[in-house]
Length: 259
Image (cartoon, rainbow, N blue to C red; front, side):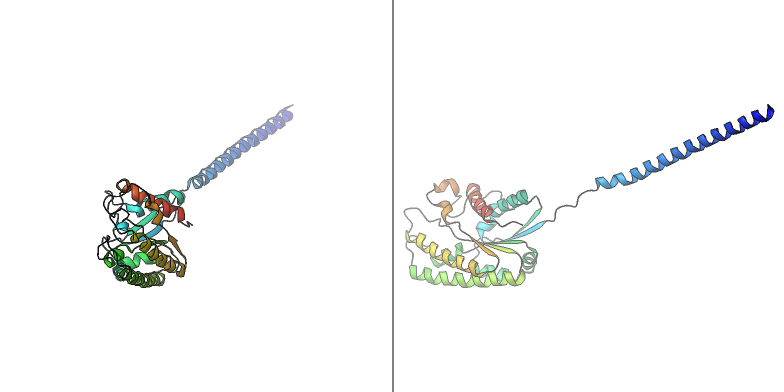
């Protein structure tokens, strides 16, 4: 009987020890698995990288600068906002519009180091120039327009635009260039009615330069202010107010080839 009890006690001790070891290693294994899961879980909350920003450059005169808009956004500020909303990416704007600037002056502006650097980095370039060329050629006399002088001015604008677009392409071969045509602010009865025909011809030259420029789009603004109440869309005789700039911006946004 004594030997039997010893055997029973021994077997019981072995079983109990085995059970304790099994429970111990099960607990350790569970803790290890939990630790691995905790190490992995932060990876599921890694912040997504910020969308790559786009850069746009605006070149032109006071219409690009935004004169007539108290906030100085002009059409290009609204275009930037629209692009940012559509693409859900940051859009950086470099606006180099200068009040009173002509096409020959804009061409010289492209040799400015800061302007050139922005052009080289741009994804999109907007060019809106020619209004001051038109005004100077007309001698600021819009009641009696000399069509021969205006024809000469048209050729000068065409030549300057060719040089401008060639230089833009030299500095940046990939950016899409948008070239805006002119609108006619001189529509009242006391202005020479020939101005509409002259501006259409000038726009023909602008459109031709755009067609000759790789990766370029011409955007017409001529129709935007036909048959309107001028005081509703203009801050003075030539510059739009915010409502007028909004019209230009909507036309531009409708023509954009976004990527």
